[in-house]
Each structure stands twice: as structure tokens, then as C-alpha cells.
Amino acid sequence: KLVYVLNGPNLNLLGQREPGIYGAQTLDDIAAMLIERGGMLDCEIEMRQSNHEGHLVDWLHEAQAEEAHAVLLNAGAYTHTSVALHDAIRAITTPVIEVHLSNPHTREEFRHKSWVGMAAKGTIAGFGANSYVIALEAAAAL
Ligand code: DQA
Image 1 (spheres, helix red, strand yellow):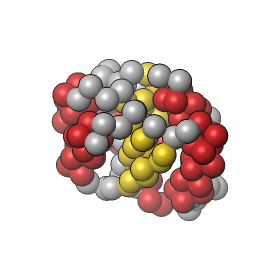
Image 2 (cartoon, protein in one colour; image 1 turned 180 degrees about the horizontal axis):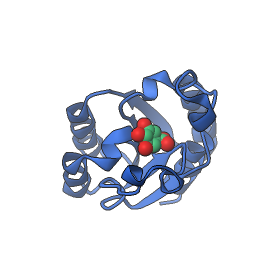
Image 3 (spheres, protein in one colour; image 1 turned 90 degrees about the horizontal axis):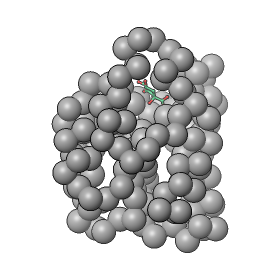
Image 4 (tube, helix red, strand yellow; image 1 turned 45 degrees about the vertical axis):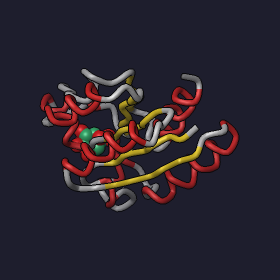
């Protein structure tokens, strides 16, 4: 099962970026966790990160074209702003699981609205790097 794991803006700085909120693990650490768990779940991980909204849109289309089993999407701040990502999720039939390290609902008001979540199959948030692993388990079970 091919699973795309798409990461949006500033997530390339994980590990050094506000570690009190986002933890000490880097995106490479998370990729390693996913590859290990993926091995047990018969899932192949395609890990990507971009600071550019359109790249994320293109990769959602690609996931469908490549007949991916599911997409895990941490869109970073685009979660709260991007109608384009909302539309892209709706435009494909591949199930998309919204992922966040932090729980946006416990944070600033501007993080409470999620354009991604309004189109996604479901959301896993608030468990740090483990949010990705839990989301992968959910994806594998789809
Ligand atoms: C985040 C939460 C977003 O509100 C924030 O803009 C991020 C990271 C998370 O994983 O907790 O960049 O998506």
C-alpha cells in the first residue's frame, strides 16, 4: 500500500522550530518512524515537504494518479488558509487524513478553522510525532 505523507510550510525546520510545541524530532526522524511502522503494516512511505502551496496541490493530484492507498497531510499553516488544498482533497478520490503534531483547537483562535479538515476523511492531532504513526495505522486499516 503506497501512502503519501505530505508536509507543508516550516515543517522542514522540525526539531529546532518551537520544540516546546512541536517536539525535538526532525522530519527525517518522523520519516524513519513511518518507514519502520509501514514495514509492519505493508505500507510503502512516500515522504515529501514543501513550503509552497502549489506543490502540495500537485502532490495530491499525483497521489491519485499513482493510485496511492491514502495520503497523510500536515499542511502546516495552509491548513487554516487554503481553499486550494480543500478543493484538491475534494477533487481526488484518494482518502486524505489530516495530521498535526499539536492540537490546533487548544491554541490560537486562528488555528481553529481547518480547510483541510473540512475535506479530509479524518484528523489526528495533538500526539506529537506519534500523530503521524497513528494516522498511518488508520490509513493502513482503510
Ligand atoms: C501544525 C499546526 C499548524 O497550526 C501550524 O501552522 C503548523 C504545524 C502542527 O502540526 O501542529 O505549521 O500543522
